[in-house]
Image (cartoon, rainbow, N blue to C red; front, side, top):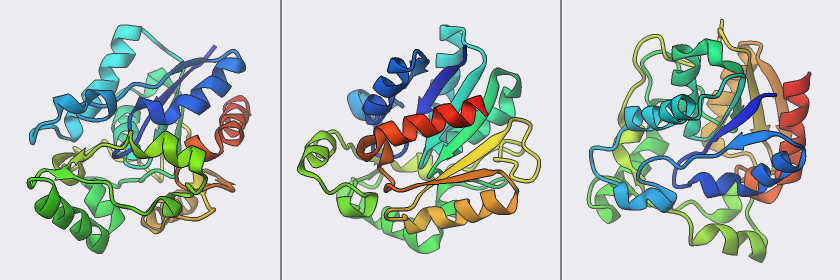
Length: 241
C-alpha cells in the first residue's frame, strides 16, 4: 500500500489537506499531511532565516522518521518547489509526484522566478510594508482561489498565516528542478480551472509541453478545501492507473 504524502503551499498548513485526508482515509489509504516550519500551528517557529531548504528538510524528516516507502508525493502551490527537490534527491521512494496547481521550477529557479516578476514584486512589497520585511501576508481575494461559500471561508480565513519571504526567493540547487523533460519519478499535473489562478499558468504550460500526465479539476486553487472528494478521487485514480 502506498502512502500519500501531502505537502501544502504558501500561507497554509497541514490543515489545508484535512478534508482530502479524510476522504483518502475513508478509502483505506495511508496519509500524512505535515505542516512546514513557520506556518499553521508551527507559526511560532517563523523567523527571517526560514528558507526553502528548511521546508525541504521538514518533509525529508517526515519520510525518514515515519520510515515510509512507495510514496505518492503531492504538492500544492509553492509546495511544488519542495516536491521537485525531494523527487530529485530520493527518486526511489516515490511512485508518483503530483503537482496540484503547483509551481514547476526549472534548474536554479526560485518560486519568485516561476510566478513572474510582477507577481513576485507584489509579494516583496507586501512583506516590506506589512510584514516587517520578511513575512509575506496573505492578501489574495478568496474568490480568486475559488473560495466563496461561508462555510469554506470560515474554515480557511483564520487559519491563514504569513509566509516566510526567504522561501520564495531561495533557488533550487542544480539537479533539483522538476526535470520537466525527463523526470526520474512519474510526474502528474492537476490544473485547477474554476477559476484558474494566473500565476500557475506558466507551470501548467511547462507540464503540458513536457508530456506529463495532465488533468483538470473544476475547482479553484483551494480545491483541497472546496472540492476534496473530487480531488481525492482523482488522486486515487491517477495512482492506480
